Length: 307
Image 1 (cartoon, one colour):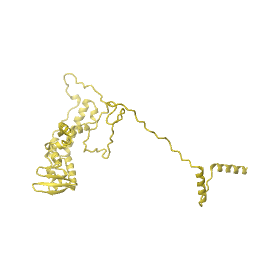
Image 2: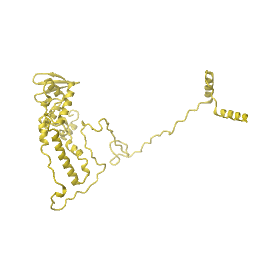
Image 3: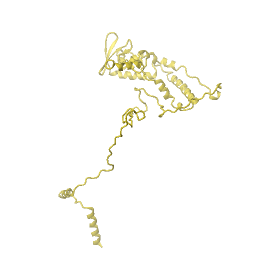
Image 4: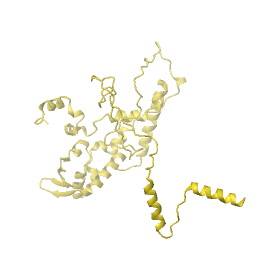
């Protein structure tokens, strides 16, 4: 980027790419999330409580978190695995993807791994791979899993200690204590606390959390997202609306409308009809075609003869 455009490189570096670009994330973080996924997940968790009164909202959040901490700790109480459940599922998927890798050993504890048209260098001693997935997340990538399986060792032993079951139990060991009802709360002294004035913002309020680009929606896994482009009704250009448009207004192009209704049938000339009748009469086992008016006249004549 610096060779192509120095100004763009300086602007990119000035925006602190360590916060949004995975190429600049340090391995000490042991996390590859570039979004604030913790707060987004929490907002989705308290979705029903956010629409209630302030006190009732806080009480429902407290009780739901208290039950969640108890439930999470009870789920792993009899579990003897080295890893927590979510990391175990993720590691099993990465280990399954490693079956397409081809491992080439080398001296010095390094390995060369081929995957389709790509090639990476894996160092088991430092627990690193040139794809940087193992370095950033602390979980072996498919290339690292292929090397660990080549050495006939357990893949779970190379996961960072932050994802161990012991750390998981320590995180949920201290839960929220239960409290009495509102009638037994002590009275607060001083002036009553009033909520701030409500300022209605434009647009519909968003309640669903923003998902990670690599995260799939479990409810609509196969749904394609519709991309809508904003079009200005003043200059008819995309990317903005008429409120902030600074271009000169132009006339709206008139759309040509076609004729409505069913198309009329093509009228065949009389010469064509005569030739068609002659052709039908010349063919064997063909029934002559009679006009409707001729049939009506024949019925009238037959009725007069009977009278």
